[in-house]
Image (cartoon, rainbow, N blue to C red):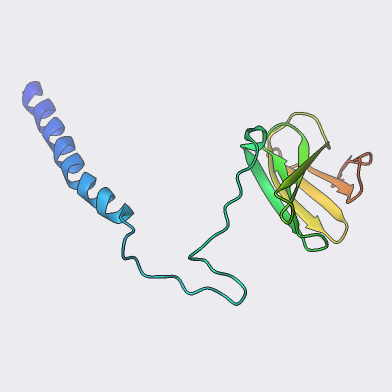
Length: 140
């Protein structure tokens, strides 16, 4: 009886795999796909791809700075803030803001950064380099 049940389960799994493979193949097929309508000033059908250093392969947060057309990013667990200038090739700068931890997101508000840790802690420091004033925000 057990053999029959196991055989039935294996057959069901094989059937699902047999049905899913064509679905996955055709859902990824892109030739002839409808072009996307882009907002003014953008072409979503021809994105610009910038290859970054392998050293920053696990970014957890990104913030845009309109003052010099650059992105700021944090690494997921190193405590480093990166500045990626989009107008120069890209040029990447790096500063340490904290110790190793599990960082989740980054926000740039006015002239200050706020970084969220997975524990719920928020680190705050001004948009000034080198970073010397990183502080933990206390909610007490």
